[in-house]
Image 1: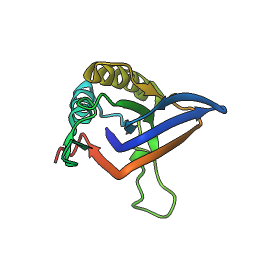
Image 2: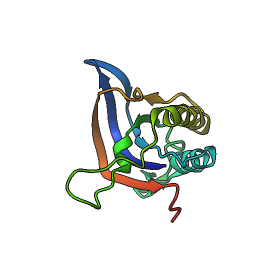
Image 3: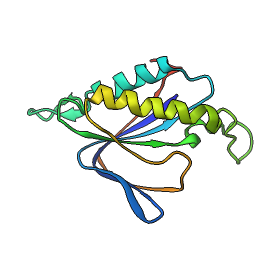
Length: 150
């Protein structure tokens, strides 16, 4: 499972010209799911996401988590995070999980992330054509792969 975490001042996702999810200060999280992912990957990532200290404290040092500041999370599914660009110029998405595997894992991710944050999160819609808008704060952008726990 791969995530791109962006610290944002605001973010939203629009589907069919209607805002589907919207947050102020918090995290925009893009998640890519592969067939080998499990509940263990979900739990590890969700814990990491809500406790990642990337928000400034009173001394203007990145020392606070999204949980510490009472921030929000907007979660968007994005299979293209598993693009392979090894051969040629057209990415392959063969590692991205098929919907019958990815949808239940995405729903479990939403449930686990909501519990970890201790409040509801905003989401996109799996498989929809989404327009994501954000104001990246910093900018701060973090990449995490649950199969490569550095």
